[in-house]
Length: 112
Length: 110
Image (cartoon, rainbow over all chains, first blue to last red; front, top):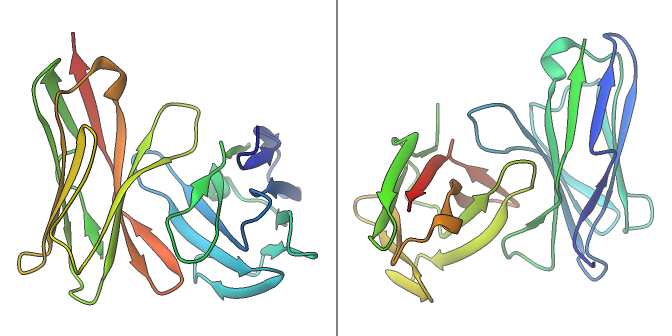
């Protein structure tokens, strides 16, 4: 399967802990996006990479959030000192050029 | 302040009939529009798109209509099938990212 993969699929953590999610995009895709989705809402943009460069970050992305894409391939999203409000589905998408993105299955984060 | 609105949270349609999902947007500068479908426990799947130079795009059972003057687009599914039951998101291209509406849950009844 050559789609977008995300790991882990589910993460339960205690408030104050750090968590890291991984996204492996479709191999030839140069663009990678992170989104967050909460119940009853559509995905909300968090950040965007073109190759290894992080070109745009949403104001939703507080200082506790950091994303990397060190070699222009996979990406990681880290949340430090998690809060209950961080509980959401974290979605990764990739694309080649400016077309619509192909989404991964998401990582569901629950902060207790 | 939602830039993309889907005012119907849910829609039920009989199998074989037409499903019409609606989406309104606020910024006349948006120039590329997409529809995604999402099943439970999966990420959204790209369905169909349209650029602002067109007013209609068709792909099999799916047709998207764009009314730029009204800042409105719609997705028509005909004939509707039970496998079409999912949440449908309208999205617009905004800079380097995409802004999504809140979604409409479509239920196609057999």
